[in-house]
Image (cartoon, rainbow, N blue to C red):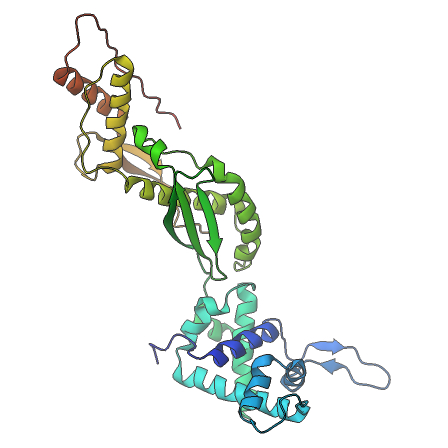
Length: 355
């Protein structure tokens, strides 16, 4: 049962999604129509809900009936009582399997119950599905809302990012963003290979900023619905920008050669060019935790992913390359390998370290 964490047939998925549409905001006993002098108040009930759902005549239901009545005229209208009884049996069979043979807490916590609903609505859907099963089993009774919520442990779905390089040096934006209903983000990069290979500088993603902003404005309302408290839109945006850039950098680093030697410069401009290139190469490729150029820098402790918390953060020590020291060392080494000519003057290049 623990391993059965997915719905395995097309009809079960169709029925699950159909029920999700009708159960996420359904409250048994809620007054639908106020009482009048001649009529009692009309209240929401599972009997009325099933009657309404059968009246919609969902395609998966009519297809199922026609498949099991092949001799019936396919153009004939299916009687309502057959639609209703078949839907009841289908829901009862499905919920019985769900609650007895499948890992329903994991299914409920999975992307299957995600958007476009809030966590509260997702929980209401899960409870209603359990109550609907009890109703069709002639064993209806109240469910402990709090305990049920603790058992299934609903949790917001976080962004999951993957990426690939789809083209190189095309005259278009560097990034295209695609996302499915489960917040799985696919980044397609147009890598500026020629520009990067000049000095190993990481190009800006500024030419894709409009595309990002347009995409984010559509996505954020769907994403934020999952949370019971308001989340910081700017923090989520900055988190995604940072992660997207990290993926971009990863693809650029894949272009780096195995080694890079300082080429002999013909003039001062070429010497500066080679110095910056050598510095960038080291910064991109160094993985030695004991690198002599690493120095501890006090930085705020990062928050886990894009969580909706505004708590103050402590500081921690983080190792970063001291670019001034690295630049000075490369300058001295290049001077030793390629001594200054008699008619040549050299000054150590300045590397702007501001963000």
